[in-house]
Image 1 (cartoon, one colour):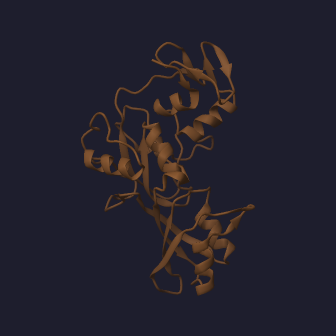
Image 2: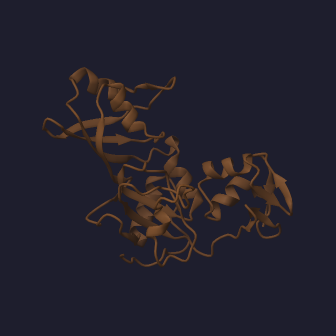
Length: 253
């Protein structure tokens, strides 16, 4: 097998998304044949070289796995937590393959979370250039004025960088209304910060859709394997070809 960039190998192996894999390399947590590698341009052959992350051997998956989860509030979107909090990994009982979350929902947010060991797909979904839309339902402590809605749609400067154009509409009018927000980017706590910039605090935040994949009626804390049709639609939305092999059959938890 030809040599590939290390971050691409780690992503394909289901260790992390390509972005997170780059962080692992820069942190000096990756070795190739016993030597620590900390440069992003480094390459290796996953079939010939001994590649390890934190001392654990990296192996390419025999098949890709795709899981949809309804993440509850007060669950961390990581595979481990130094504070001992419940993570999404704790909810995946019976999954033998190593999968990682595609993007994050913060501790107090809930809703649709995609988990997979398909690093290429994860990278396409996370990258703004992939134009994969994520849809959120957000409850805030007061309505936005028309001019504030227009600011939201055009983009808001956060930490010196303007957000990409977003779509927003009122879906439930009340003293504490619900809005539907559609984004193609996903900075850390972006929606909460955008509303805060406009003088509103987010009370509840639920992701209901990633591209063509919807949350549906999954109870909080439950998960299921995606169907072959769902994986195909998700890959097409990300501008990718159909998978070479069918994913595992759907299973509900």
